[in-house]
Length: 224
Image 1 (tube, rainbow, N blue to C red):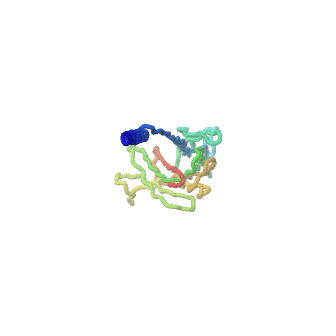
Image 2 (tube, helix red, strand yellow):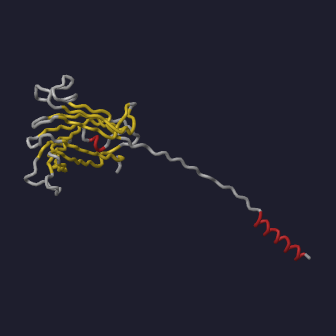
């Protein structure tokens, strides 16, 4: 009898170990909030704005005493806000009634309206010219002409081979610059980069031509 009683006690102990099992689950909740990368044009102006062709509302061409040509700019595609001012993805520049030796300058401000420091990551430029009923691609010979200056001679790709050949005309000179090179490496939130572009129409520019240029600058977070 004692042996049976002992077996019962052991069995109950095993059953207690098997069924008297309490659990408590701990939960960890995480919260991640990402920042915003928003770099855009805040403002632009030129040194020869207004209408061209002698219109009294226009300005006199730089270095001349007549209003023959004009250079204007405007901003498109709002992407954010910098200190309550809108910033835009695209700046459009129009030069009308230009002629050889006409020059003009465009000034712009680039602002970081986001919360993440940014760096200038890449830039590209392309374009076309249409005259005499034909459209041609433009080719760009680029070099650094100063610490913060990128200069370009712009040619017409007459034979369409994508290479600047000796007989292809150079029609336009362009100088892009910024006032502070360090801001290209790191543009902090609320910082402003002052930049500009200078254009000079060269002697080989065809008459009655329409040129379209598209330049893009890609910005990335500062630690790429």
